[in-house]
Image (cartoon, rainbow, N blue to C red; front, side, top):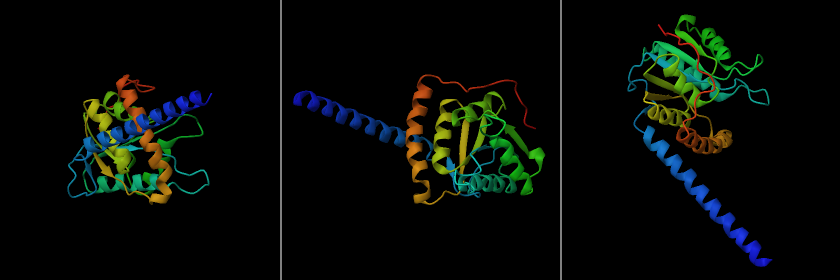
Length: 214
């Protein structure tokens, strides 16, 4: 019996080691791929017609406003005001009538003074992969500026690279390490899942009719 438990324990340790190495290697590949395509400065970032603003929920479970949400909106407005993009494509989850990330973001952009004609909405951005692929397949963009926090931009750019989309990223302000610890852990796992999705040619949940941004 002891030998059986010992064997199970060794198998568990081996599996844990392999999984850890896989996570570390995947994380490193994604970061390296995007390293020369992400920008913190408005001065240095190249122009693109469209900025792809990746959505998130406006509020946290405790009712506070989500800092990631606000900082992404601020970053999109910075790019637009600096004439580094002409349009904002807001891509997010609209899975139910009670949850609509794109419309929420649009309303806050307009409240900040952005004209509605500069905003396009993608209601089927259920995942980052969906948002990136649909920016090309539905909205016709071969080149985009992704707008999110750095860790998220890196993953989006990696997907874009695999889907033959020329993407750069503008890094929205990040949040404190303590506040974002859970998000950072989920991001490591999301990168592994992304690799599997790409390997198995996972497609967006919805495609549909093409929309022209002009």
